[in-house]
Length: 244
Length: 234
Image (tube, rainbow over all chains, first blue to last red; front, side, top):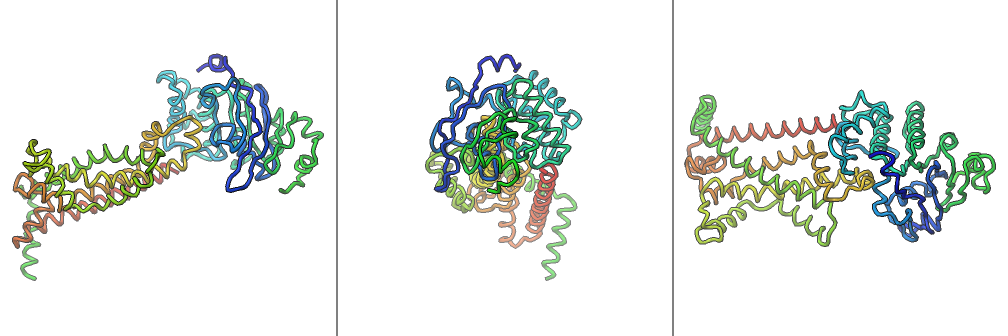
């Protein structure tokens, strides 16, 4: 489980080829195409209902698109096993904090001794060592989200999807989570994250995918997006004028 | 009324002096019920979890059938097991009819659908909550079965207690296949049936009190399991 061993054959870039998703007769995503490269922190922005979470879920394989195709490099077999996802509210097993991390490693077939070391490392990285033995579901929201990050980091994913990871957190917990995300990115993991917090997007994004009403409006370098957005909708969104 | 009071007094006497006959009957009852429950758990828990997690044709029908089997009439189960184990039946050569083994089989058949149906509900609820995360980790249904059984452990205690309640209080099936033979297959419920019809109320009442205490204990244990689950599940 070293970074070198799993990253030798990269599953990136990730390409969306004219993806559409419809539910109950409504098009929630239409004709979405983009390519995401390694080494770049991607933030998906857009108002509520724009299709941000949907895009993440389709990319991660939790949802099957109605039309179009998700392509990982070389149609990589088992690409999903090299990804992890952190949700808005951490979904934790009814076990101790360390058992939650251990479970994820067991799904990857990591042998027991290696697991023990990796679990300890993951909890140390996220500042949870002192509460390793506590029941995961009685931890605070911030601790729970850090545990979700520890679990994701432990399996050393090439791509880490984060769906509004700090939406339910207070400012201090948000900062801790952002620092962890940046640290994980600096170790070579591709970050793809949704947020509705523009300040957070500025702090994290190298590039921005801007969605509105199920369509990809812009795919731009972060600096350009925040300085001079190409579209009127993005400009309105940044100024806080875009309500739907 | 005097007769009833006298019977009640001698029932209490049997209980407080730990009458050997009474203890023997209580012990056999617990043995049979717990053995049926254990076998039922081995079969019913994975079965219920699998039914919650695997998608296949006819699943809806299987769920409905299982739920209906929770109400299997004990006398019918007793009759079927009797026919299977009777000398001319397919399993007659085992010689198990009118033994404790026959009673365990009958209770296993009665308890398994209850355990499976209640387990299915527990596991389905957990899956609803966990599905995003487990799918993200690449956990398929086969691997999710042990995961969710373990994570539902406190709620499954309640399920096991419900199964135990069914087994320990059941009379129809064990009477048919066990035959209520003294010192061999006489359990609390069959003894109560016999003693009552003989008019010997003191042993019946004493056993009835034990049964009531047991069901009180079961319900207290269920409440404790719920509290424990609430405390740890957050």
